[in-house]
Image (tube, chains in turn blue, purple):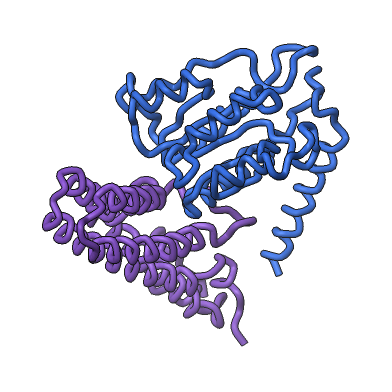
Length: 199
Length: 180
């Protein structure tokens, strides 16, 4: 009854947003509204994936989420897998930003970051690291390789809201990906300072 | 006959009025509000006794009409995943010589998931275990792991009870639906 009606309205609203997104030029930065940002979430923890997916989906409809459970699968999505190479501008795999866990088996988040930054077709894609460990060496090494930010888990609403800023182009001739590198969140320096989460 | 209305009508008058207007639903309303009190009390205890922390509230904030069971889904997923990790640690502890690095890796995953759902006591026990791992103290690991398993089991039971009660509570409008 009531719940079905609410769900139907939610689906209708999502479809409207999707239609608007499809009509817009993805490179349009003339102030015609917010573009949908496609985020590739990489995390071997099913619990953390589910929570991050929900955080992204609840962020005012500006994120489209693709999530995988390993660095290897992330490479496939990004078209960096040597065996199954995909065209770099293949629409279905167009990723605007990568949000990856640091600690993963086999291929770590750091390995993934290195691979993304080593490849000319993916180098411009911003990569944001997540970790439950507040390790200054880890943060520094990620920054040195080109990570946009390093976020402590568990993620909060403000953390995902800030993701969008890493993909906003500066001007009409800018390519996807931010040329303006925001300062890395030096969480180690600030000694774990964090806004109080809302109730 | 003039009806004398005092400035502070007795509670019994309201009780009769409620029974008159909601004659079929008043018992349901009482039941619903009793259920809500139980739920509130249960949740308060979970926090006061340190089983849950602020992160659990964060999950609740993410729940909405389009995902009305989000918290329960996450918790269910947690216990499925954590049971697997606990079994892996159990197996790894039986091996000799002990691979402390592997033990630490698995416990790191368990601690991370526990932290993500706000399972504070579990998280703390996982931290203790990892400290014993770092010191390659097998006896310490074994003792600590018993505590991890205990906290895991206790939390599982408490949250199962909580969500069972929550399901009985249902959407708010059920409480005011008239009976037949």
